Length: 158
Image (cartoon, rainbow, N blue to C red; front, side):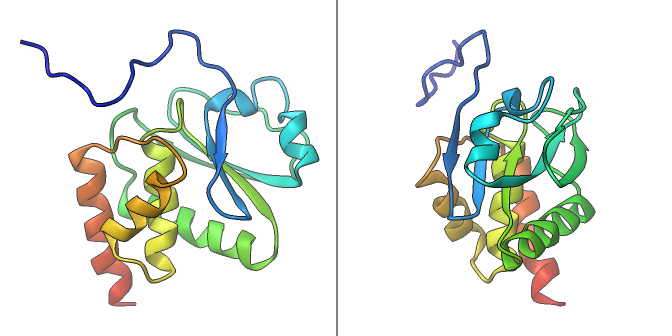
């Protein structure tokens, strides 16, 4: 018997959709940057793109900063990827630069990285996940949640 999900099924065709998580952090789908960076995001002042897609490399023409952290779908980023990504988000935010973080659909890998940023800023893993979930529908895997717990321990010792 198939397990019933609390979330609606994903549409077959991925469209551009995103949520503003903080004043500086946008989180969404990979449709931001297929041929160039999405004009509406540029108009909103987004000047950085962080992609966690292993399957696809962005063409973010129009932004000033681009970071590619390739992570296989449904897998957690490595601890090194979480640290580099979270520190990059922190540097961008500290310099008043808006960033768009994404994976394929913006529900797992991207939210994991944004939660890691909140952990770096002092939240615990559950609070960090809740902060993202309060703004966007997400569904992290057990492995991604475990990676965030490990990340919390890692940054607590630094």
